[in-house]
Image 1 (cartoon, rainbow, N blue to C red):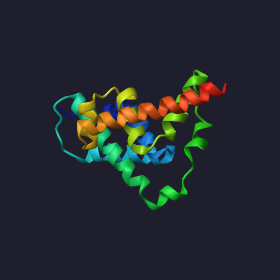
Image 2: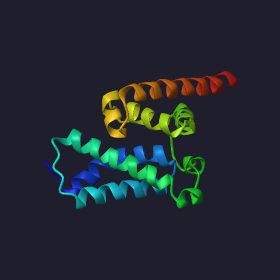
Image 3: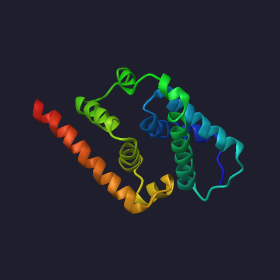
Image 4: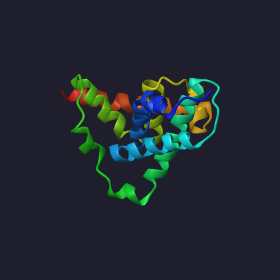
Length: 159
């Protein structure tokens, strides 16, 4: 199965951007990672079993490219996620608090939290995407949740 590039871009640009932003914590870097993933799709002749396979492949390419970007020289010359957050609108104040807490997590926790809750991947699928063991993903989810709980309960107890 192969979809036209226009269809792929329209259908997957938002979830890929969200995944890339979770890793890069920078809108420009996330845009670059997503664009690179679409270019790789366009240039490849890879056939996919179904749309689920295509989506997983795109996210894997995007996450890997995002990791490459943040380890580059340009990482040191970027706008912070806090500055970007000022440009984002949230429907509810709690959404801003949750977003801020998730962005403060270590990369490994932030990525699995994003893929599990926002992209709705199973632990097995996340392990496949990240090239990790399921047990590793489970422990990262558990530790990420615990850190979020601690951060958010501190904020709520302060109010």
